[in-house]
Image 1 (cartoon, rainbow, N blue to C red):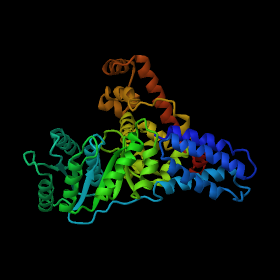
Image 2 (image 1 turned 90 degrees about the horizontal axis):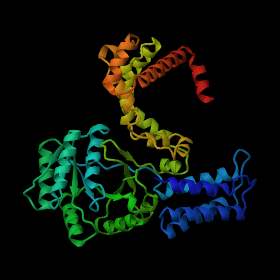
Image 3 (image 1 turned 45 degrees about the vertical axis):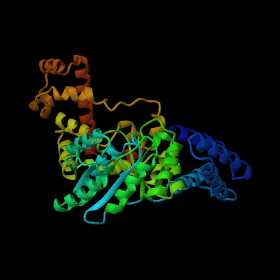
Image 4 (image 1 turned 30 degrees about the vertical axis):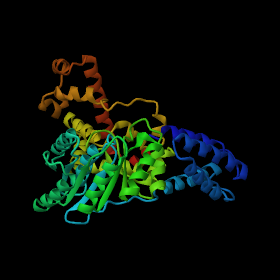
Length: 440
């Protein structure tokens, strides 16, 4: 997402790059290209114009100190304005109440049910809550089945009454059930339609009136562009929802919805979602998204993802093994599994400043580690723990077990040994020297 917009903005900044000072002319030319870039990204013309008017107003007449250039100044102004356009600051979920009730609404196909499962998983694993999912879509039997499958995957109870055709009654009964079973968050997955209609709006509004939710989250498919903004406006006029969820951010989308919705409905984007896996849900940070749009990466989010997956005690044990040159194939396999839990490899790479742009045309498959995993899984537990045991006869057996050529097995073994040697060498160096290497 945002790749095309990022490229267009980069081209716009080139117009002022190399200039020694900020002038009305070079600002006007740059702002004109920024406006075109936003409109091409499916941002409403009025929003794009107001945005660029603010950028021009802040840029013209600015004194450029020696430490920065006019192009750096323009990037900083655009970054601040992009963050402000998308809400300025991160917005927290309100989880007051016993139980806290979250109503999930949106059109059919927007990803409501999948998001409901992801949200339950997020609240359970990251917030320590005891959530319960409610299947309140009485028109689509597959929605109830889908929610039950998701619930079983993440270990969260699902309340459903397939024979009950009153969505409001189901919601009320679900709240009572949650209270009696010590569930402190209830997530209600409501019915959707292919387009906004009165029957759907009335039903969701009646559920809202009956259960008085602390949060109403509107789920929108970000790939629908400007139509998503118009749908959000229609829902907000009827429901006054408290937050927006943008789904399918990994798709081929121009990003206009993410940039326009906050401005249009004056409600924050609270979550962004990509993929089908239950752990691919992220809190939306406007400032971090602005950095990513401008090709600056997002190291903060990358570090947070890593912290969520890596256990401090395990890290200490691993460091001791590395110091003693005892890092083995099982340790390596465990680390691969931790990295895979952090999300798609290409998304992770895009968070590293400068790397995202360099890798934009490179297809990084999430199956990139499968060959290595197959080789390690073909080893016996003894071989994984003692790499030095593996001789040619064992390599031949491993090669047959994983379906890889013996040359591939040999190459991996050689690379693993080189990695172990590098780890050992790094651990022997003073901390200051290691930091110095990292800065080069």
